[in-house]
Image 1 (spheres, rainbow, N blue to C red):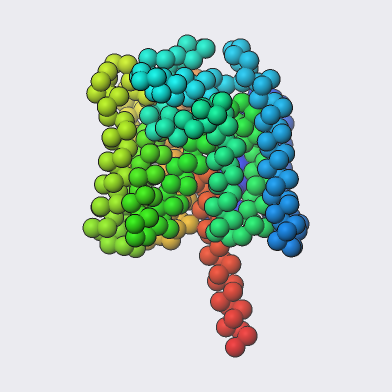
Image 2: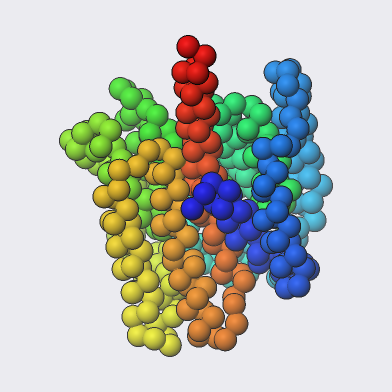
Length: 376
């Protein structure tokens, strides 16, 4: 699948539910068709040439997002069912419980929801809760993601990708203004893996620990570990890969297991498994089978020799698989597509956007080599 197809999928699939909710299916189809066409012209989007003008454009873009958050978030955060989101409230409650020395899994949101996040997400959200609310983390992680993109391919590409994400993927803006943490969560795991693939020497340990904290946020991200192990083993050798990911997995376990072992019956993330296991009600073990196929996919992809860009695209594929499978099972079970289920494609989208960036970087380098060869 070409990078253009990956970009279309990363923009459209996570946003289907919000576009359908606001506009209905006919306009949702028009939206999807518009994005399909618009992606063809992404590289033609004019970007200022001078470094100073590019910096000004980046600052202006960030300012618009901040102003949008400041204006809309207070209106969305009204603690009324079907308005806003209680995801930020779950993180706020969990972090405050931790800081007070209590288990976060004794808390409930204003909708009575159990806290489904693993402890690592509370750790990452803690600085923002101290500043006022976990909703602030979306602003920070968006900025960090596009700084990483800039590091890989330059300011012009980072600006184009940011503009495309903000304009053509409504879920990005929706999660910013409602404080939903799925985007921040996905970006933190993506950037943890990005740092791990770049780190060497003493920084490798720090990167491994950081990725372990990020992985200890939602169980679905653990399926990216086999892919990372295989890639590191090919680059650095098996023993280095084993040591690195022992640190990563050990960090995740140290953060998570104490809460589970202390009170397994109160461990909220177990309830989150019903996103998959609910299909067992109609077809025995259907959800278990979906997880088994996800595991087989991750293992099968381990044996491919891939570059960094393909590593992230494979991670996106693994994260998207259970969402696509769950949406299909839901369609068969209820006779209609549960568009809300497609919002979980957010967990795959940011891996895909990083993979697209790295793939474009590889193409740029190949063109530069060809030009240098012709000029000799």
